[in-house]
Image (cartoon, rainbow, N blue to C red; front, top):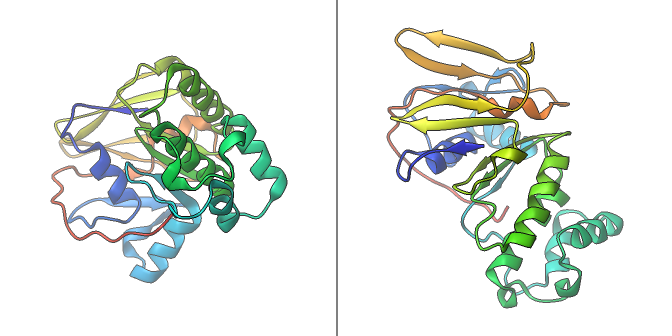
Length: 231
């Protein structure tokens, strides 16, 4: 869980990780490789293969039904029915995205991530527009999925009891605020000069404890060019 006041740069951090923004300093390691040193095309391909990003924008085809959107990323009917049932969306699977409520759209986007089945989920305010019952459903889903992948969520909601590591972004630095699990050998913290930076090496089988993330990040980061995708 990544917390911090508005304007601290939480969404900017996600955009940097996902390759939507460029920065002057810092390194991002994915599969033990500094992806900033890769050619742009190879970097983008590696990010898209490994990371799914639920942003604050709706990234679905609004004129298509929910079911059609899901089939566009994965045509596994069993998996589609499974996630629709989990997220309480069975009754709207034939409904066009543009006709869904905000809460249904939010859960639909999570269903897209579930169908993509990538190693890393970046979730920017995943509980927005959800009532208490549906927020609990989503939290239970994320807790289960965190056994098999890395999930990092930005949220102002009180969900600490569901997470394993809590990070706080303050004064452009990431600090650990607390954790509900024991330190694991695979996670190493480096202190570099007079700034604290974090380097985490991704592995294909991660445990959820890797929530401390992927990044040696130097935080005086100007904001630069952005590009976008449907997913």
